[in-house]
Image (tube, rainbow, N blue to C red):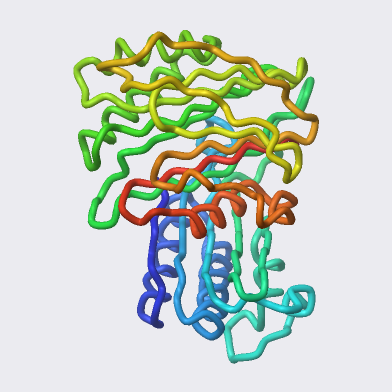
Length: 338
């Protein structure tokens, strides 16, 4: 689950910094790297408070693989403020319009292992920073490169756990992505959605229709869930999809939407229409967007085509910012061709 910290004044900025540093220390970061995390979070929050007045810090642990050393710490800072008219100038190391520990947004580029920035005048700013826990190189890719995946998974306001879950498995040239929305909210909803993701983890070789069938049986003793599964054969450039309930999915070629993916009505584990599996072409510059009904149905890139050029985690954060209903658990997953 993504940790969400609203930031409207300096004490909340300090809370975000402490939370990020604690997560870094839990991952085994040394003192120097944890200090870099602290500066980056402070710098991003300073920029947010000065120029937008309010926003959110989203913190999560991501997985490049299943080994502990493949875990990464990721920070997203999003706001709906005035945005930056000259982002390039603001990213120059040392450029700042206020006194801050890092000396400007350029410090984020310098201190984070990976970073990305998106800002539109009148619409707001999004800042992404990421640090891997391990210092060893990742596995050598064979075949078609794996998809790059980013996500935001936020619980309903007032809840401690998120009723939505998601997962991805990428054996060989196949990428299988699931989003599950447990019925209702809170702990029991989270148990249903987590059980669906466990089914994916244990059966990464199964087709989307087979996975939905396994979930339907596994969730009978639970509240049930809306579930969607997209399986992308990167070598054959084909997407296979099966869904039950109101998890929405779309395929984009760059920033252009080329396909809405079709789900049937029902709740996995309880009542479901006869499941159907559909196949769609996967563009070479393809991007998959999947989200629960915590986002509005018009979520997409229609009014923000330049967003498609960015890191999938940053894309997910901006879509969450712009389309979140605010009355439900909210999950958005973005997967892009490498």
